[in-house]
Every structure is written in structure tokens, then in C-alpha cells.
Image 1 (spheres, rainbow, N blue to C red):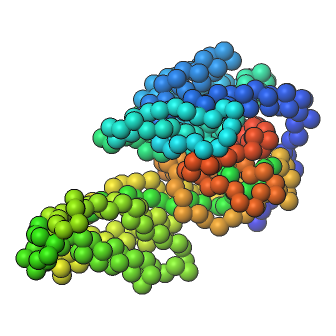
Image 2 (cartoon, one colour; image 1 turned 30 degrees about the vertical axis):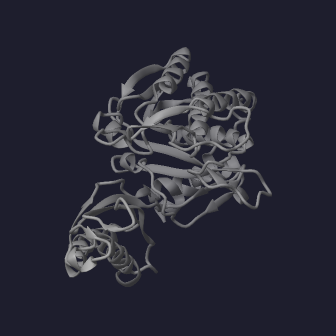
Image 3 (tube, helix red, strand yellow; image 1 turned 180 degrees about the vertical axis):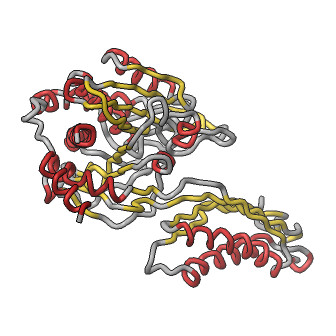
Length: 423
């Protein structure tokens, strides 16, 4: 009953932009936000290599009078804005890295950038919308820096590198930021993050209390056989056959050992490499895959059974196999109390009919490392042109974002910030 009363009071106390004289300022910044987005889109950089991106962000934050920290977790930027009155500390986060994806969309600001990935030159594209996240948060910082009299407390603007994963052999992303103390000095009380979504309509928001995105673990399997001539398979041990049976067996863990009516589990082998020509049975095979889980107990069970099953199946085919499962990202978990507290703010800014409660998705986000330390709320912002029946998904060459939805992102971060800090 006390919690319901608290939420009701909070709903009553949410402000409107007009009440605070912010509506015109917010509307006026849209063109800047779009301009920034197009610059970052045309000049993407890969994880832990976002040097020019970070430089432009830092320059902007310094121009606003914020206390600015650079080289956080390699290329991260943090801006600290203190309000006129004391209060809590809120963090707002945007990720800043691009992906090794070639862009096919016919845009005047299309990316033709190149970068180095796993020792090879690759095309680089903001194929997940991080360019929009940067621009939105820069816009929020500009508005809030001009209205410190309306801020009770402090806002930390966190521009995070390497959300898509640090290069092999390097640390990075939210985990390294946390390790380096980004949530300290001043100590953060709560954190908000958003992600643009090319498959939900502009001017809508979606959210879920509790687990909203899956934990992710990458795994690598090495299979050792015995090389022989392809015409005499009996004289060797075929690692390809063993690999096929391992893949098949791993899928039965999902279909036969996971209670999928509770939460989803997805296991995908995305790469298998073996052999050099058609008539040689190779000596070895390697596989790379990903595991997505939304329940920590199910995750632990999958890890245990994968470690048991892989060498056992290989042995049945006279081969040997080892499996390595990385630490990955935890579940992106929206604190239920914070989510309930801030839901009226989402509905206020977007309209109740435009805020959608969704089921958890099997994508993953390293925003989860922040949420392990402080209560967090992560939500999705619509980026699809209304009426588009075939939007292109993230991480693809044709990925496209309708820029008309970005202003809602600015408004939402501002609404959440002032409601949280001033209540």
C-alpha cells in the first residue's frame, strides 16, 4: 500500500516542459542533434578506437562548462553537471562505438570509413544506432547546462566506448568503466540508458521491469581429430563429424533441459572452421558461438551441461574437444522499484498510448554492468518510420533510423532526470 501511495504521489508531481519554460529550448535543439548524429554516422570508429568521436564529445561538454573527464576506459568521456541545489547523483549513458559492417543505405551522410578489426581492414558503420545515442545525450547536456537552477543534485553524462565488445586481448566497455570508478566521486544513485530501435515506430517508447535483455556468453570449442585421406576415413578421426554432433547435442540442451515457459534460452554456433581441401580429412575444427539467457539459474545449468557434453560427444566419435565460455555480459535488469517510480515520467513525455510494455528480448547490453552496482532503467526509443512494414534490423548493412524520433529521446532523458532528482 505504501509503494502504491508513493507512485501515486510521484505521478502527481511530474512536471511539464512548459511549466519550466523548456519546451522552446528543447524544440530548438533538434536541428543540432540531427547535425551531430550525421557527423558521427559519417565518421564511425570501432570499439576502443573512438578517438575522434571522444574528442568531439569532450569539446562540446567543455563548451557547456561541465567538468570533463577523458580517457576513461580508454576512450570514454564523462561530463559532470552540478545543479544549483544539493541532491542525488544521476547518471545518463550513451554508447559511442561503431561496428565492422559496410553501409548500403543511400544516405548523403553514408559512412565510407575503414578500421582495423582482428588484424584486417574492414568497413565501419554505426549499424546499431550509437550515433543517435551520442547526439541525444549531447543535446540533453546542452539543455540541462543552461538550466542548472532546475536541477536538485548532480548529473553525470557517461559516453561509453566498446559496448559492442573490446578488441581481442583488451578490456573495455561498461565493465572497465565501473572498474575505473565511473560510478564514484560523486557516487551515483541511479542510472538511465536508452537504445534506439529501428523496428518500433518513432515517437514511441518501450520498457520492461526486471530482466529486459539477456545475459550473453560467447564460447569457443576446439575439436581435435586425426588427419587422413578423404578416401580412407577409417584411417583417421573426423573432427567435422564430431563438430556436427556437438552442435546438434548443444541444441538439445535448449529444447530438452530448459524450461522455456519460464524464460527464453538461445544457443547459436555462428562460425565453424575446418579443413583445407575436398579430399583431406582435417586434423582439427574450431567453433564460435553465443549463448543468451534471461535467468541466472538456467544460465548456470547451461554452462555446466555444455562443459560436460562437448568433450563427451567428441569422445563418442573418437575425437577430443575442449570448450571455453567467456564471462560475457550479465542480464540487463531494470530495478522494479525504480521502473515503477519512473513509468509516469515515460508516459508524461510520450503519451500513455505510446509507451509499450514488452517481453524480454535475447539481445544483450553491457549497460548491465552499471545496473549491477546501482539501480538502473533501460528502455527503447522508436526509430522506425511509421507505416514501414519491412524495417531493417540492427547490425545489418541496410540499417536505417528515422531521425524524427530522436527529439523524443532528448525529451525523455530530461523528463526522467528532473523528475528523479527533484522528487
